[in-house]
Image 1 (tube, rainbow, N blue to C red):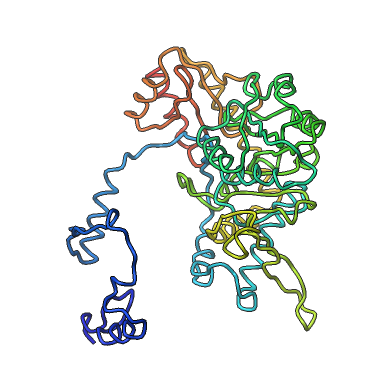
Image 2: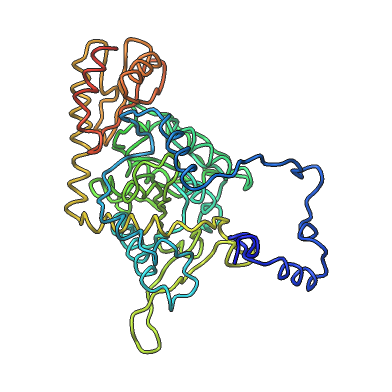
Length: 443
């Protein structure tokens, strides 16, 4: 059958079949099926020339070839760890790659079990009883934590208090979430990169619903006062939300032990390379908040023959239940990214995960010490322990140094007029010698 006879390959109907379907619904044309206001109608041609597959591939290669080939020492929420090839080999199998939400557990036991294992890993890392597998990224997970604070009966107030050094994008998403709920977002001051405890105490009152802290912080410092912040939150009957990630949590204090009620972050530090926005929101909380958890939960049960079985035991997003009863409007399926994270973590195992975390401390300290020996550079700025990244102060304007480094094929973050953010992991460590030499030349 010719292409014209089949119609579009994405909607393979013959003209006769299309006419028959239009007759069945009482329409004369396909256009009648859409009620699009004239003001927003697009009536012009798209003017996209027809190309065959070979031409499209050639054009894309040329387009992507225009990207700068830089060695990235970037961090600030997006981290590049080596992903073993086995993760690709397994996760790209068709039964995983083409799977959508596991509505029919009887045909999705394997994927449901993988998601259950992912949730179980987060429960072990956080010490909290509940973890889900349906958040977009760290920023939306933080926003969901803020709205959860408004649904918890033991919490009064409508203020969420966050670090003054919270990443701009993360705060922006939080404020978008808060704008429709009557929640206001305030900041507490920082002391040498970490929370100023006196400032936190001054920022809290009985109108606070949630206190948020990060470890590591956006500047890579390890927060040393988590238990004290948790106590301050508890004194004001507020939730204590901690931001972190699975690699850091394998080495740092267990969140439950420092009083955390909710843990958020980006779990895709495992399983994905740096994806510049694509992520996997980590969300774990105390078991008493079970009915208020956004998204969905995979649970274990038994079938009628007594065999272990997995299913979506709680689905509180509006895609699944009445809108007025939903706890979240998040609907995108992040299960495949969660699968990759679980595969990566399982391959590392507990010892391998700790080894990776310890290397994040050693590499940051080692590179900071080398940069501190460069004339015109002081690193790290903050007298703290660091994880993956740190901030360096430069005598010359930071933007100018970053531009010169780019001409040398290295990328860093400009944090302030004389502050550069530098991140090192196992993926860019082989380029450290050249990076330090470039800093010596331009600083």
